[in-house]
Length: 118
Image 1 (cartoon, rainbow, N blue to C red):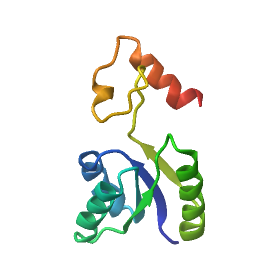
Image 2: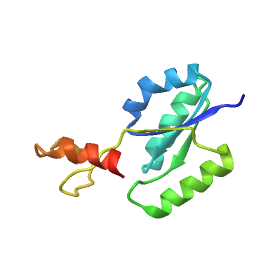
Image 3: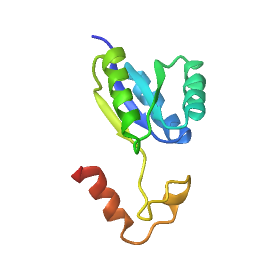
């Protein structure tokens, strides 16, 4: 059986604890990030440790990058088995890094509904 493909979204620090567990289970890891430099840096560091991993350019608020990532994954992997999404939204619409850390009290409910009602 070939690799299972998992696409991870999130910061490099968030990927570090998950990547070894997935690697031990024969998983090819796809790191999705809008910041090409940070995504490629994360991938390069983990490749040096022997991980089956590659970078996929994607910004979840840009439809064109979602379509391109979908085509890339379909062509290169054939399928995507698991999606681990460690991104969030802000109620203010502020997409700057760190903005999600200052949430109003109803934000947890909005985040859950974003993930599960979509």
